[in-house]
Image 1 (spheres, helix red, strand yellow):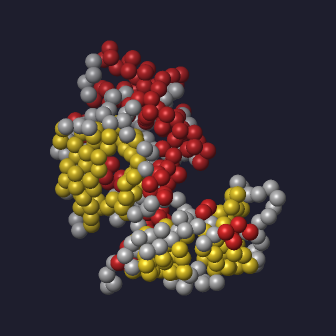
Image 2: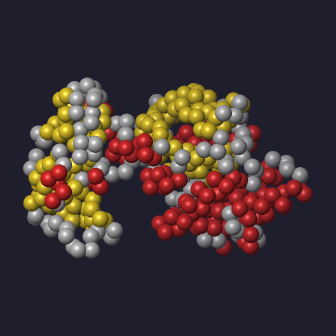
Length: 358
């Protein structure tokens, strides 16, 4: 049974449509991430689940209960805000206890539950400190403990790592994921960071312009994106517009004939090529798709090197290669041949071409 169910959930602010009929089922114990650029409607969707924003249309169900009209304090959800929203004048223990007090939990029960929540987030020795005496990572854990102490049916995370530095984010996102699995708590997180989403989620919900573009596992979205937006937003892709001219046949706008796996109808489309699926060097001769170009830029990324190539068609693509110890990397200005397999050429609908011109 789904722990959380959204049914055609919508939100309008005047004439602006922030969320467009979002429907989603989140299973018991599942970790789902709403992923998309700023302004896509993901945070508004999360706040409607929590009860802080009233939907214009649609339903929110927690288990078998319709909670659409209930205020936040009558929904058994725990929320971790982007800013953490800790009370600066209260100690760590008092911050964590706040939700229990608002729910009129008997006082003898509050203290042991606070101790247990702080133990879960590994802050046992900091219960008497004030928020200003904590690091950013510790404040984030206090906010998480406050959300968990009420034993919510659903945990809601709004960009919980955005205020942490890059190194600390790597650590905390693993801690959150491990804790979520340990507690088997249904979780919905909002982020615009695709790396966070790919690492933490059981399933991803990609949103754009207030609507859901695709729902699936990391592998499904990466290997089989539904459209141009998803192909460009989840991971990195070289996107080459063109036309499907027949089964397994695609031609780019620059005139490159490509063998691919598409069985779609002839018409405008986009070919998505992942940089790591492209090949340079002698191995190109074994591949069905090959095209020449000039190296315009070398991007050094440590473990990987990005080779930016201007093809003879005028298209520019990026080839990602491991940083080889032998130093056999092309140089700027070199003429190279780029190749890829039939399976590497993923053809997706071009929603921009399908949109009526105004």
